[in-house]
Length: 128
Image 1 (tube, rainbow, N blue to C red):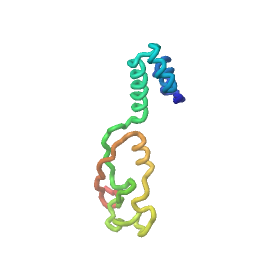
Image 2 (cartoon, helix red, strand yellow):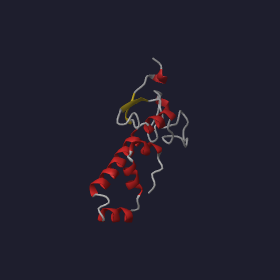
Image 3 (cartoon, rainbow, N blue to C red):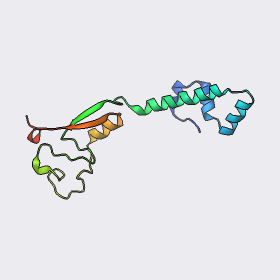
Image 4 (tube, rainbow, N blue to C red):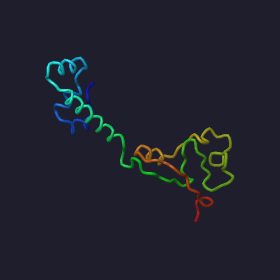
């Protein structure tokens, strides 16, 4: 497995990169001949895994986010305060987008690691 990620190369040592890029047979041979210890191999892969896990998290990882009922979330009804929009997509009955569409902001929040946990009510048409 070759590590082609520049991010990983910035944080792994040269020996960790070498270990992570070794074929399993060569890795096993190196540990048998005392070229590498099991601890060195474990540390190299653990460090790489920890970095990879951090990289995927995003700046909002784990933050609970509440949303007003004006953002479309796939699988969830959006009425924007209109009772007439219940069971429709923005008032259009039988729309293929009903509960099957998501807003750009939802994609951005999820890609940043945010946890969408509740929809809050809004006054009629989001007016004060």
